[in-house]
Length: 183
Image 1 (cartoon, rainbow, N blue to C red):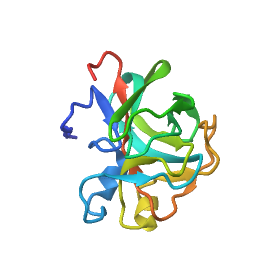
Image 2: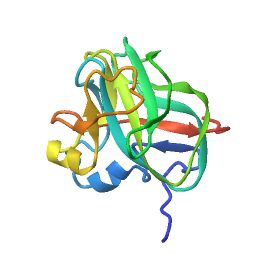
Image 3: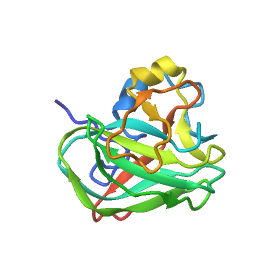
Image 4: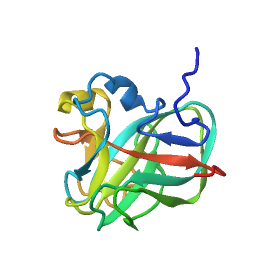
């Protein structure tokens, strides 16, 4: 099978906006008319959103990141889960810092992922905080992309119990940096 290169080499970054994101692969053509991500209020206090990602090769990571929106006063927890929703690692609840910028947060320790399907998890403490996200046309498309949510999930739980995503929110712009990357 021919590998498709994203704009940023997959050896440096895995995110919800590159070609390796399983949700975005399925969602192409299902985004609303706004092609660029937009700053959008988080759907509810302490809500977690889980987005599938594909790891193409064995990779080692040491940092997570989120594209903060126009307001960022609460806390965020970023993590990665197995396809069975067992937490591998997370940043823990961390104060959000900066508006309309990429916030980088170190993982507690570097971690390796083998090729396969995983879920990036993101939970934000305050519904008035915003994050950049891709808006999907409706909840059916979001569910079709295997994007899930969970109430009262900050900090991210050791085992997630996700449900079908509700309408009104899309795919948050989040990701991970490989160990030693310059980003």
